[in-house]
Image (cartoon, rainbow, N blue to C red; front, side):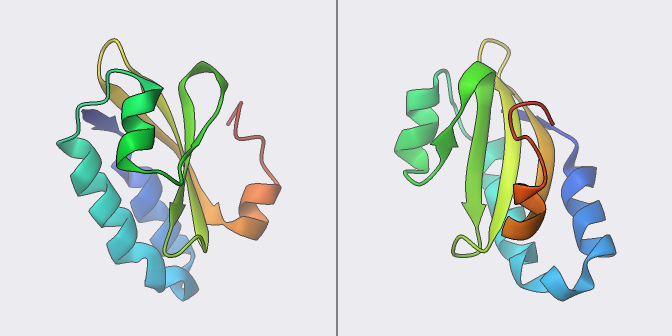
Length: 100
């Protein structure tokens, strides 16, 4: 997969130093996704059983034991993942994962 906007993850840690406990898990997800082959949402679900598949290519991943949320938009046809959001559950509750 081609992943767009790793800077979203990096910026999250720069702006939230108290969330350092999710850095390695987030970067581990990134390294895994970089080499993944996800032609359909079912393939994402088979790799990440706890991922939430939303409408229109949106997927929510649980990071660091479900302490953080990572929202992406996947273009399955072109094998591109756009990182849209990473944050705590409280931050996640303040966004609309379908439109961010």
